[in-house]
Structure formats: C-alpha cells, structure tokens
Image 1: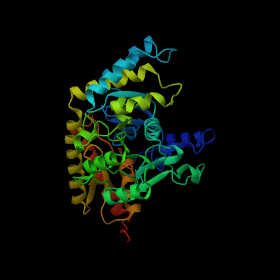
Image 2: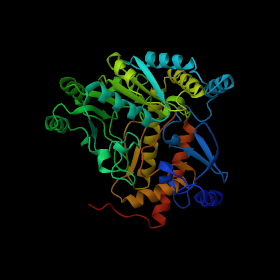
Image 3: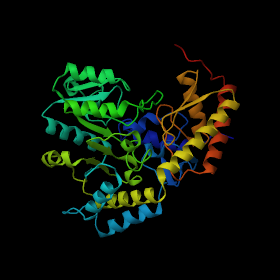
Image 4: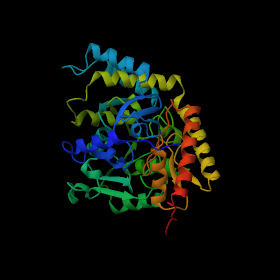
Length: 414
C-alpha cells in the first residue's frame, strides 16, 4: 500500500501563504504536516478527496459538524429550497420559529432557543446571560476546558491580556472538592459554572464524569445561585438526542449546541430554561449572518433525520465496532491502542510510546487514506459503514508495520 502523493496540496499551501496568514488559519492549521493533505476537492458520505485526487476515510468529520455524512440529500434539499426562497433577508424567516420549536421538542428540559453561527457564539452568550441573571462577574470552568476563542477562554495567547482572564477560575475535572473550595474563596462572585458533559481536552485521554459528579454539581450550583451551563457543542447529539445532560442525569440552566446541529451548515444554538428566558431577553448579542434561513432549514432537517435514524445509538454502535477493530489491529502488531471518550467521539493513544511515535503512526495512516489527528478526539457519523471499518483497519495495520520498519518507535518518558 503506497503512500499518497500530495504535490498539488503542498503547492496550494505555498500559494495560500502569500495571501492568508500561515496559509491555513485557525485550528485547521494544526493539521498541516509534511506529507499530509491540506485542501479537499470534494466529499461524500464518510469520505473526502484531496486536490491530488486521493480518497480518505474521514474520522474527523470536519471536527464534528458532519454527523449524517457529507452532502446528505435530505439536509441539502431543505437548505437549497430555503435558499431559493430567501436566505439573508431584512426579516427573520419563519423557519427560525420552526427550528426553535423542533429543538424545544427534542432537548429535554429546555424551553427556548437562540441562534448564532459558531459554538463560541453560544458559549459567549450563555456567560453574558449568566452574568445578567446573577449580577456577578466570575466564571468557573474546568482546567483546559475549551469553550471558544473569546479572549476570556484563551490562555495567555498572543493578542490577549491578563485582564481578559481575571474573572475566570479553573478547577480540575471530576473534583467536587475543588468546585466547593472555589465557591468558598469567591463568595457571591461566581455567575456560572460551564463545562462539557465529559472531559475531552486535546493531547490527553478523555475522561467520563464520576457517577455523582453532575447531580452534585447541579446541587452545588442551586445552593449558591450559580447558573449551570452545559457546553454540548462538540458532543451534542452524539451521546443522546435529548441532550447529553439527559444521559448523565442532571438539568442545566443553559445548553450550548453547535457543530453537528446542521450537518455542516453554519449555525449554533443556545437553549435555556423558562427561568433564564427573562434574562436572555435583556442581553444584546447579534451578528449580520445570525438570521440566515438556509442553515436553519438544514438544522431542522438534520434533527429530523437524527430522530428518524436513532442516530446516537447508531453512532455508538459504529464507534464501538471501529474502536474494537482498530484495537485488534494494534494488538496484532504488538501495540496497545488506548481509546477514551464516548464511542462516537474516540480519542486514540498508543500506550507506552512517545508522542512522536503516536504522531508518526497517525501520519502513516493519513498518508494512505485514513484521516486521523494525533492531538484531538475523533468523530463517528451515521454514514460510517463496515466497509469504512475494514478499510481503516487495512491502513492502520500497514501504518503500524511502517513505524516499526522505519525505526520510529520511542518509549514514553516519565
């Protein structure tokens, strides 16, 4: 199995650098590695093709938005029909109301919805509503928890200042004592607690909540008048179609959705309880493209297809099969592939080897047609099939053998 040639992709990257900072900006820039593809030409179902014509089984799903398969006919049809009627108009489209009603009917315990473009719109708006509701300034979050690129979420990166983060308190995941200590040390100052449903940072194993974590967090927040915000942007609809909080047994005040909500069309949503509705009406947060009607139609169709196909359970099954199959391939080559996170969002790590070795294996996979990343959780969609699992295993097997033959094995150091 030969490695792919990515000459055209490499040339396009150099062309891009002349007119775009770094050539590929933002989080997509982290995937730029020598020998790997940089630009796609088309996509369909669970696969995409780069501009050199190479085909890839896609385990990143565009970092999460693709949940039903690229170019899903029902979603695309709904979006295109709405686009023909009108997309960005001087009035909101009635589809906005229909989408909000669909979300309220689908997500347990939520009574309203507002819309933006990115998950960061939802998380930023949620923090503003919490501050308005409580009259407090501080935000309590998890260490390395990612809730968008707003300055208060960034950790001493260029362009940010210390003042951006002075109202943010971080605590370890799964540590109820640390949460209670933070509240005691900042009495009547914490507006909200925000977290993903489980810990899925980059560069380390993902971790589930302990059995009592979320019910205890809910109780603590209620006792201290703290708004409880669930960031379900990444995991939303992959754990439960009713919301990840339903799976883990708690009720948040606000829930942030994005990524998979419209199968790749640009839209995000913030949902909340009736108690939060009055505050949501006060806060001003908007954008020129927030009222695009076509993505709203796509989101409505996506949710309908998700419900019809029992998508969360389907992706859990596919993910379990993919993870087990790749684990067996690793074992047959003398390695242990550690999988963490939910089955539909697996984080992979080769046990007892260095990060460099793991990245070498990932590169060998990518350069033969299995699109993985070394630093991020992956995603499974309803479009992934047994044929994809078989193809992924063939490539992974060759990749394991390649890193052995190339002498790219180094052990993890303490």
